[in-house]
Image (cartoon, rainbow, N blue to C red; front, side, top):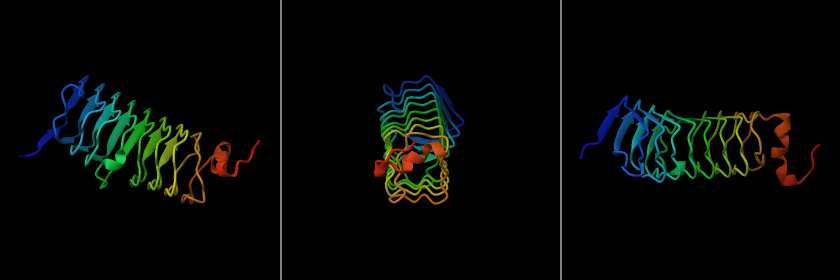
Length: 190
């Protein structure tokens, strides 16, 4: 069976929890105020698409392609980005809630996280070179054996990053956030 192809389609206020999104390839499409929560987006390809004010919590992403995707004002709890097709995985997140999501072993260089909540998000063994965490809340986010070289954390808070367990060469941190690099030592900084 041939894959269905959609181009430059705008979809608004559709509840995909009741009627599943058609499997296929979506290019230059916009999804606005749609509910995808707990939906199966497996083996669907998205290229240069925008998701605006959507609920994508707990969607299944097995072999899903996400290339040059913009997520804005989205609820994205518990997403497993490590299930996506790894090749050309590229996204921008703005004003999103990505708490309890996983980027385990993904390569997402130069990713922008702006005004995004990342509580208990897993970045273990993640390649984040050149990524920007602009005004993000990283409470209990996990960075273990991650590549954070040239990443920018200057305006973010509540992160805990062990410099001995992560590659942080040329990463940027603010003086206010320096305690997040020293957590393991259980010291008090005034």
